[in-house]
Image (cartoon, rainbow, N blue to C red):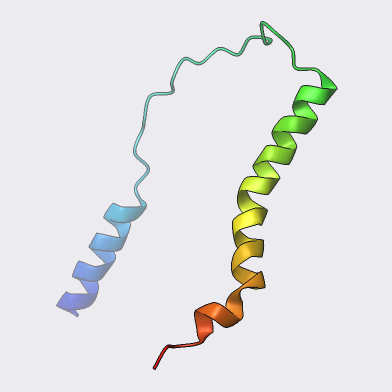
Length: 69
């Protein structure tokens, strides 16, 4: 019974809500809005940074699987 009480105390301590002060953030409109072309270029660069390495690995998976003897 003692172990159960200790476990419930630990659980209750973990579930207690601690107050954290909120940061005072303010959002403003951008100083220089991006054009549609700039947004398209940024989106293409983000996608290519993730998809090109993955595509390279998948295209050359047979090289990674084979082990030299």
